[in-house]
Figure (spheres, rainbow, N blue to C red):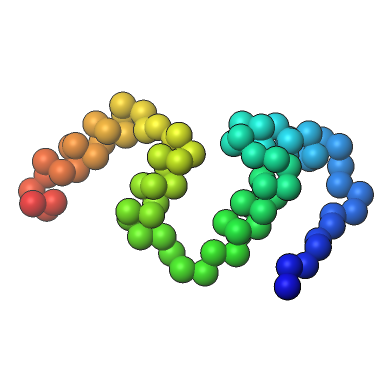
Length: 80
């Protein structure tokens, strides 16, 4: 059975940041808090496929510098 949790005396600054984060993630405040709790309580590490799916879902991008670093590493003999 689901349990109701509450946070008392949350500072306005934190609440404002949470609301902004929720809006940026297209979630309600409740949904954002649940996502944070779920992420904080994950037990099993993500597989590379799951990690990539999460990055894509969060619309994260890598910089061109990181791409260059990865390419250089792959070209080194010890990565072949």
